[in-house]
Image (cartoon, rainbow, N blue to C red; front, side, top):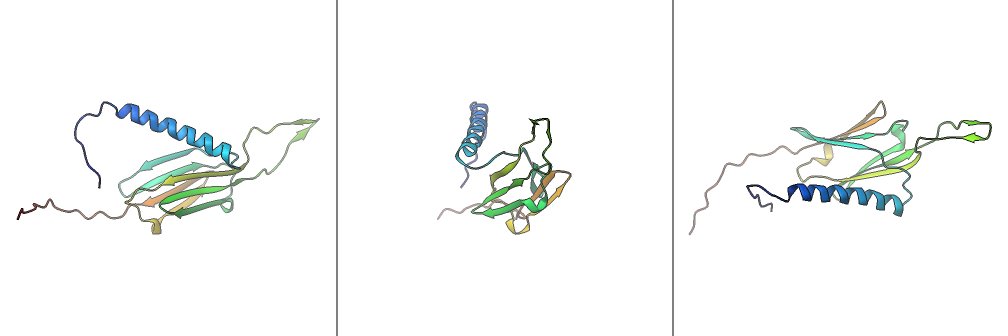
Length: 145
C-alpha cells in the first residue's frame, strides 16, 4: 500500500542525490565483482501508455544482445566483439570498449511483461514496456456499521 503525503518535502533533493550516488556506486561494484567489461549508457522515459529504455550499443549486433524478464527485473546483456584490430609498426590502439555488458532494471508494477517489444536501429536498442490499462475507480464512501 502506498501512502500519499501532500505538501513540501524539504529532503526530496537530498534523497534524489543519495539515489544517484547509490546508482553510481552500484555500477562500480558490479564492474569490480563480475566479468562485465563495460556498462552501456541508458536513457529511460515514460509515455502515457508505456515505459521506454534506450541503450547505446554501437557496433553490437542484435544477435549478440539478450533481454530477459525474471522476478520483475528486466536484464539486458550481451557482448561487443572486436571486428578488426589495427596494428601498425608495433603500435596498438583501441579506444572503444569491447567485451561483455549487462544492465538490469526493476520494473514498475503497472507493466504488461507479455507485451514487451525491442528493436535495434543505428546502434540504439529501444525497449518498449507497455503499461497495463488502468481501470478508473470512482471514489467510494465506506459506511460505518
